[in-house]
Length: 317
Image (cartoon, rainbow, N blue to C red):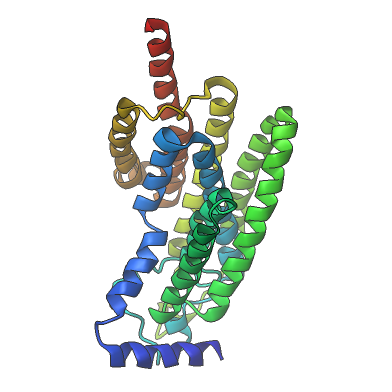
């Protein structure tokens, strides 16, 4: 049934020509791209520290949860399962890893749903708009032929449950501040356990005409990236929470400028560092280390610089 639904959408896509496909690709990419993490970091550094913190925690945690399930279920992509399916060529570059559940839909839930939860109580229209963006992103993955309905539906449910649980956990941490160290230790332990699971579990090894159909090592890359993000996020989060606590209340121009400039090293950590480390430690661990450093940079390194400038300004004033 799920593949017949994709075949129906494929016929619609082919009959519509190039009318809707670019729009669906834009919607899909908007939810999950390097620009998404960059925007979340900019918000954290210069716009709203508390919301940015909430946003980043939801994003990295739900990403790891999705990758653990992906690499446990090992569901092949739709076009691997049925040769009649031909996904939109422009969507193939971002269709990495196994199929179930959808990573793009998880990212949309983490970003859009977080906005709705944080600001939607006073702006119901915003909560509805963010909910519509989640559904549109999920549909775009079906329309482009890279995920089944089950993939996106499961992602919405799983990420929704994660956001709810994470919200309750953060409320408890606010009531009992000393729990933050245990939360950070638990997050780092979860990241390492996930990596051990990725490396030790078995994977399907199906061959067609002597060629491996899906390479598990390629499928593990997103999992190592997500685990690295979580591993670097939590110590940075703990340091910022206990030692730094910079402010975004005054919205000074220099802070916006610094946040914009700080995005440039992020790009280097994301694009260049994995290539430099891969010959030394292998592609998977290069991604893990790079993403861990990137998350720590976002959560602690840049906030430390902002905090130092703010303290200097207060002393000078």
